[in-house]
Length: 112
Length: 113
Image 1 (cartoon, rainbow over the protein chains, first blue to last red):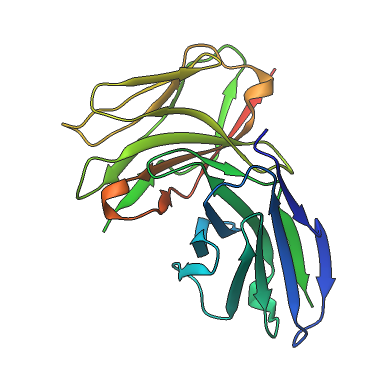
Image 2: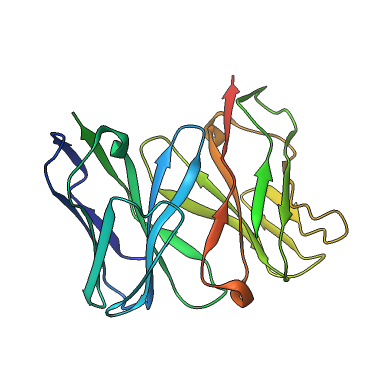
């Protein structure tokens, strides 16, 4: 158990509303990641962080922003949700360069 | 760039059958290779990994060998059980090209009694 929690676990929202998903870790690992999972696409990287206030874009970053003001928390924000952002979102941490990624339980987001 | 290709599913097997899920990769360096498993409604869990050529990763009866000459990391199990029903993801990561993981699209396995 890598001590990763995600909140909320489920959310239904309307198009155009802002949404923030939270990932929390208890072990102060440096690297944190946000993915989305969609049928036929596997996991696609949205953003990642390699330390407090150090973040970078992934493959599908358009429409998403992130913040990491504390080591333990990595927030993903959809500034104005769209139906194409309906997905399951996973947070992951990594213990170090070249090491394994460990995943949270996921957040299921439905944008109506 | 780095990428992973794994066999399309879904795969349906009878209990005690032999399982192979193919995975090939493209990488500029010398990546570490991983297999993850995802049970319904859960996040991904590490199943096994290999960090250099000819290494064999193994766990819970599953095995995969890192083959540099064929750029492959095929997942095998000699006798599957109903409880092995899940989605399996192959992935690679190369510290020399960044801190990202690259995942395959996943292969759904259903084992019937």
